[in-house]
Length: 457
Image 1: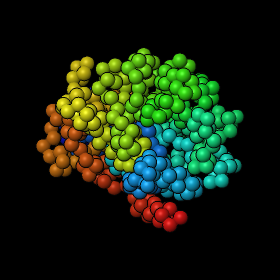
Image 2: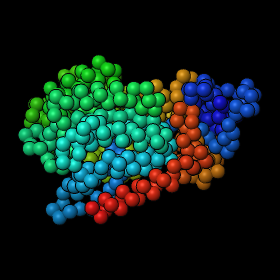
Image 3: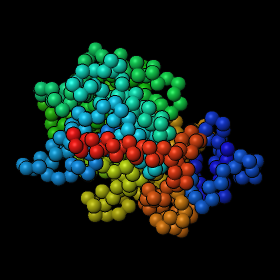
Image 4: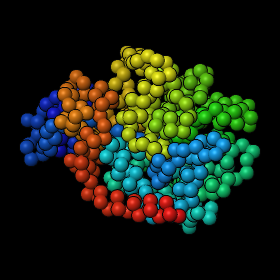
């Protein structure tokens, strides 16, 4: 099949008057002239630009349920607690069918924003009572089923959560997260076998954080991931209090602890990584690990500003994630990676021309190929052999009116809004076509029903 847009971004270059050729299995074959392919195999995308699909490397889909409902301040001023209480309330509420319906709506919103792969950091394992389901992977399988229904690629990052923190009693709000130590790897292995052969599904391991998983257990999970060649994701240094607790328990900060015990590596992704020392950033760079920045959630929670310029100078790969679903827009996260630094440093173009890379190319690479790499998937640049995961932009949309080949990358990063996105393909199959998804009405209706019951629960 030959997809024929007016403008094309593929193989790291901008093209005009060329098409993206795919094979019967939905893999990219290359960028070619239309004349080289029979007319019956051409798909006209006139008036559009075609770009690599966006990667969402860190998502908690169920948190979409309380979007906009935890933005205030409770008496006493503990604003993070305001958010966390709503998160626990959503976690207590969702039954497996509810989780399926919420995840479908969340994934549909992702598709509509150009996201073609999601890394779902999943820790909602147990029944509301805190007891495991007969199948301990019941909830994970519902999330996977939701992704397959919508047509988005998913890497299910099965998370381990064992405690509320160093020296703390188990928290009742987390009872659906906890697992017995002896069940963690068998449950992960069982899910790995259950999803084998499903074309849009892959797996990763995700010890939640240093505070939630004791070191010896984290090392065991990391060793399992290494043996199975799985991506390994964990939250790290999101807030200063996490660093302080880690020092109290282990005598070192979280990244230093992970580096010392072999948890860092080229399959490891460190989520947030805001409050690192210079020495820790150098340890991350030496290990080949990726950092997943979630600017929308980080500013929503008041976590701090990710030092993207220091990270760029060390050549650490950066991916992006929507995390709490406060907003689902990876291109917005990409531009905020730069804009937050501008506010902080009162300068412009801070990420431009670091190691000779132009700013829009850097941010677009983070939003695409770096996210795919983080999830252990070869993709994100529409190079030959990669999956044909892409989205298109309406060149008549007012936000990008006048976009041309020279400005394609820059206007995509700094100007494209979700209203401009018209088509989304995963593995060469159009999940969104001219702004329409075949299950749109059903997904919206079922989500509204769950939302209504949640609000009246």
